[in-house]
Each structure stands twice: as C-alpha cells, then as structure tokens.
Length: 331
Image 1 (cartoon, rainbow, N blue to C red):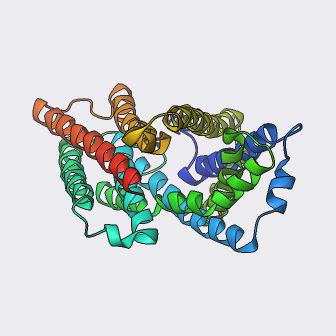
Image 2: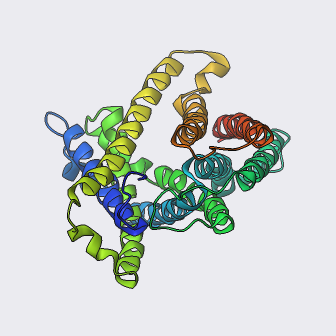
C-alpha cells in the first residue's frame, strides 16, 4: 500500500478489496473445488438460506473491521496498526465464540486466563501508543493522506472489535465445509468455500465506503491518471499476498489437525486452530513492526522510545498467543 504514492487511500483500498476479497478467493475456490470432486456450484446447492444470511452478515461485519484497519494503519503506521488490531482481534476472536455459544464458561476459573491476557494486551497497546506518540514526525503511509494519531488509534481499536466477526462467520459456515467434505472435497478445498463467501460480503461493505470517498474526494480520477497501471499492480499484489498467506495458513493447520487426530489425551484437542492461530497472529505483529522499522517509521527515535516499543510488542505477541490459543482450546 505504501508504494501507491500517487493515489488516495480509497483508490488503492478498492483495488485491494476487488482482488483480495473477490477475484482471488473465488479463483482459489473454483480451482480447489473441481472434478473429480464437487464443484463450487455443487457445494452451495446444499446450503440453507439461513446459513447464507448468517455468513454474509458476519462477513460484512469483518468488512467493516477491514475498513477501520486500513484507515487506522495509514494514520499511525503499519507496524503499530497491526499490533493494536491483530492483538485485539486475537482476544475478541477467542471471547466472541464463548459469548455466542458457551456463556457458562465466562465465569469459570479457566476463563480468568483470557481476562488476564486481555489486560496484558491493553498494557501492550498503551506502551506501543506511548512509543508512537514520542517518535519524530514522519511521512504518512500514503503521501496524499494526513496523519492523525488519535483517530488512527481509535480506528485500529474499533477494528479489533469488529474484525473478529470473521470467526463467527467461519463458525456459521461450517455447514458449507461439511457439505463440501461429504461430496468428496479435501479439507483445504472445503475450507475455501465459506471463505470466498465471507470475503465477498466484506467486499460489498468496503466497495460501498470506498465508492463514497471516491465521489466525495473526486479521487476516481486516480484510476485514469498516467502510469496508473503500476498502482493497479500494487493493489493486486496486496490481494495476492493476503490470499497466499491465508491459503498457507489453512494448509498448515490441516497438517496440525491430522497429527492431533492420531494423538491421545489432551494433545488430541490441540489442533490447528489452537496451535496455529497464536503463531500466525504473533508473526503478523512482529513482522509488521519489523517492516515498519525497515521502512523508517521509527527513524530518529531515541532509546527510550524504542524500549517502550519493544516492551509493548513483547506483551502484544505473548498475550495474543495465550488468549488465542487458550480461548480456542476452551471453545
């Protein structure tokens, strides 16, 4: 996104949404679900209307979270934006399924570990925010956008409470997974079917908001400017990186699930959702901030600022791992 220097935020975000939420997810679904197994049409033919509605509503909620993340990251930087959003997403992603289906566990001693980890997340966010507030003024992620630290932090926090709705969307889409597997699809292919529908719902929300900004700011002219092809490529690359990462994650968790299925005792419950998600979220936080350091987001910061950042990141990574892993285990 930072390479699209001549475009407004809504221009590059709409291109990302088109490729990352529609073209590539459905292309992956159609490639994975094909003969000799079931096709995408075969799978969705067996799905109830209520399932479609639930998946679409929760997917649209995730789409709102994506918008808020994009607006936040462009104002506070990608590293801090990822740290706040992903850590809160991990916490709320673990808590939401409990609230939705297992409320009796909310007052249990085991759930106290989640609440402790949430407290650590809040402390980590405060430390990272203090560090970011102390850093010297820097150019925004996109040159045509202005930085606004307070608004950016609030957008990232709000995203951390709406993005986890993707967990509820995936839960609501289990009927789609089961239908695909019963028709002979592999676990990876079956998992891709509901993801395509969820991301399409997210695209609708993102497209509506971006279109509003394109009209209000008259930034639709970005698409027709000279040398616009490179920016279309950057937006498509954003979608490709996101989709590739998600496919690798789905494949990795299928390996963990296969190992857990043959295990005994407590290890039998430690599947990909428990062991894979914490590693995935912690990696996003750490690598996102590493990218921010390499790109110069913290250039000129003093030792105390960098120490605050390091402590905050360690808390975010550790707490998100605990809350996501243990929360998934309880669920």
